[in-house]
View 1 (cartoon, rainbow, N blue to C red):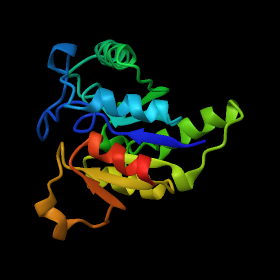
View 2 (tube, rainbow, N blue to C red; view 1 turned 180 degrees about the vertical axis):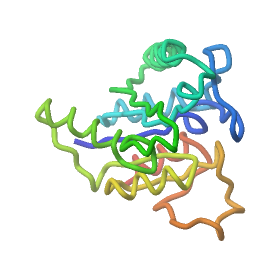
View 3 (cartoon, rainbow, N blue to C red; view 1 turned 45 degrees about the horizontal axis):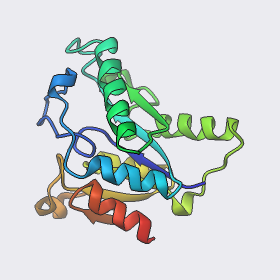
Length: 185
């Protein structure tokens, strides 16, 4: 079974800016081509998971219920366009909590894999990807044994390449372009 793990902010929706958070559905804006890309991945048989740090909950900037509202609306909009996200996993902890689920640790991916195993599905790591907009996302994907795609639709920029501590397997302008890479592999 093939899987794609997606970061949220900067991959699915518009990156809110450094140290900023999407705190309500009103602030959530899908990036161009995202719904179509997720539809293509769904049609190609990929299980799709969102893996995202959302420390704004622990910082009191928005509630867990507010985060759930954003998620419900996001999933409904994607479904309306023919795509399907199997599950969304968030780490709402602060960095100093040193939890196992905050990226770049792989705890949220491990949860998704456990869920698949319970459904008697085993993941084909050689055909599974992590798509993110930060080097932290790339580190997470590589630590989990996934192919990685860094997209430039969010935080990270191509001109910072000489500062990257780890290199992605692929780079793409956005999720739409990343999907073409995934489907071509």
